Length: 247
Image (cartoon, rainbow, N blue to C red; front, side):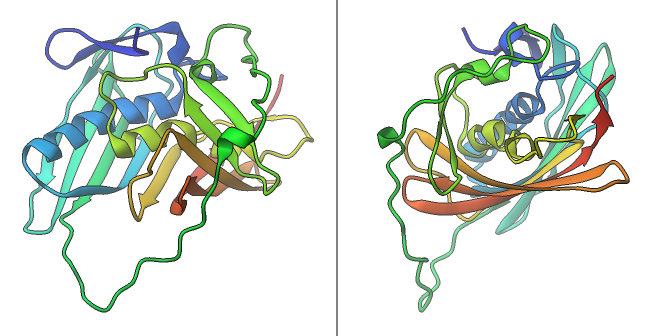
């Protein structure tokens, strides 16, 4: 069973494993749902490679029935922009924008050197339970940690039927700020957005995140990280965080 199951038209229903650590659904899953729809449109219309996504979470999205609203913002010769939205009970809760670039061969440029990684040699970390004790998005992953600090994710559950390349990376990338969070003081750290860019789509089953965070006394935080696959670095992610003391 997929985490998000399609119903009629652009209606979807969420599985309990779509939950986040706080109230509502996990943002990475919602981002993947929106972006998968846009990548499918782009693939059907030959718009090029999905290179970047900008996602904003306008309010918590509850479990149950959702509605999406994908549409084309700009279709260009090489660069196209598509957008999508999520509605719960006709209230918009999230939105996304994806940039597509048509590749063009440029002579004289060389790809960066690759660096091979083999996450299968690393031990699997014990499963992490959600603070609320119920199923959550992390239940869909097997997680490993490298000595360099790269956290490797491998999907064990299906988020969206036929999930697309950029969408697939957004799900683990949404955990970036939590992976590098300080041990103290204990804070709730919901991110309000995700900004992610890829130089190429990841190869293989594993997606790695090398996280970094900055927490400020103002209650504003920043998460960021480099994205890896088995052949080396392939992208970056950033997000803003609204820090809140645990009550």
